[in-house]
Length: 121
Image (tube, rainbow, N blue to C red):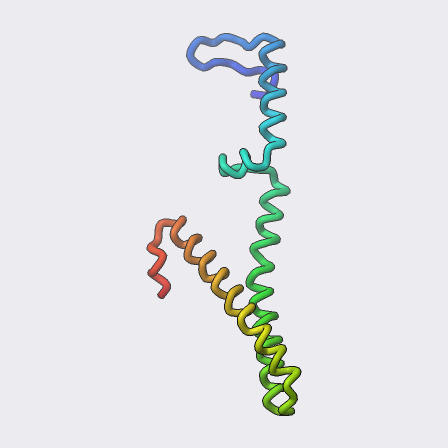
C-alpha cells in the first residue's frame, strides 16, 4: 500500500484527495520536527547516524584524555618540571568527569535493556 491509497480497515472507505493531501502535509511537518521524532523513538536515518557518531566520541575522548594525563604525569615525574605536572592536574579531573559520563551512559543503556543497573558493579 503506497501513500496515495490509504484505506480504513474497518469501513473500507477511501480518503478523498483533499484529505490525503492534508495528511501528507501533516506527516511532512512532523518529520521535520526533530524533538517530536526523538520523543516518538523514531527519526530519520541521518539522526541515527549522528547518534552513532556521538556514541563513538565519548569513549575515544576518555581514552585520549587518559593517555595524555598519563603521559603528562610520567613526564612531570621524570623531569621534575612543574609544567607537565600542571597539565596532569588539569587533564586528570577532565578525564574522571568524562569517564563518569561514560559509566552513566552504560548504566542507562543496561537499564533500558531490562537488566539491573547495578549488575555490572
